[in-house]
Length: 480
Image (cartoon, rainbow, N blue to C red; front, top):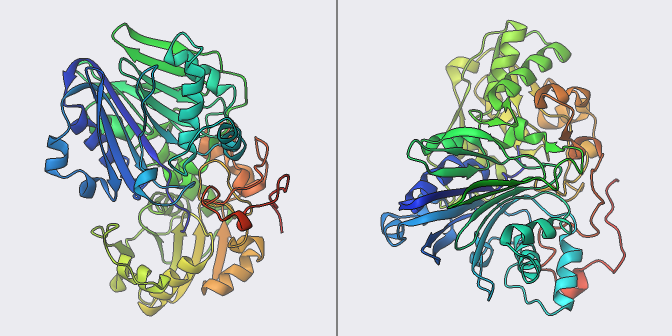
């Protein structure tokens, strides 16, 4: 699969100083699957901010010395990034910090604003100077601007939410407060918990709460602003219920870790159910079911249970490849390094191969070829997501139809192109069974966008040459 991971946000607050940097370090480790491009931690020690941010994995960026250089504090905010807006650079590392006469602020953001270009243009025309190409800085500017007339930082954030459109789960830190916010549609997950010694922890996923010893309390509601301070916990719900809930359904298919629970729905169970539905909608006679590590494994187990075909480990993932590894330029070489087939499992057998999605089809073709080389007799591919037919404007790194294989080819044609004997996709009309409700976004599959479509959606839209930018008023073409 070729869709890139989402960002992960993490924050911790206590009335007394604690090793906030180390807690964030463990939290980011648990959220590493959501982004491997860069990471950062900002600690608040008696109103002063201390930070460390850089490109790379958590283990590469936060060495023992780097962590030791961050002081104890009463709170901290952290971020691990896969950029869907803005190139990979140190300038785009989060959390973004702001120094202003109204006070300091650090902000970590997961998601994409669908009106980022319009907001940024208006800010620039009013004199704002941007130092990054991330839409997170746009959020920081608007909150700071609203802070001039607002009685509190949380009220400034609430006013900013009247302007922001699209996906944003935020953790914002001021010198005295840690504030969480989720957009009114709840595109991206956000939850909080508490440790036995009273440290409040917020994170993109519940797996990060448990990684630091916190017991999950609940998910932050779409539109809710949750404030942690010395006065306790306060909730602002003025934006709740303004929009229909639209949690990204791809969280259940791919983004989230299987041991997380998102909006009350266990991710592992959702993926098991996806495999069971695939077995019933796309049955096939085979000898063994295998999954593509890691996000295809749970669905493969579900397919096996529903079909009665034995489950096996047919592909092994090399778990020791990080961003510092110099990967071959060709995708086939990358697949061969990252995956290997277990020949004794697949040789002379009819295989059901389960993966979470197909985007371009290139990687799927290489995996099928890998299994053929290991002696597989038949390969029937089943995908636990519907075909990608439309770009995403809310955080998934699909900004164009240009490379979506399903836009141009049928399932039978794709099967022939990737070398599989057959191919079956998850039925789009049954996605609600994965999310546990009908409050989800599936626009990348069905084109039903819950917001206006932005005019320019390229990942590098704030880094383009003037000649490359679309003319004013030009709309983005969403269909072929």
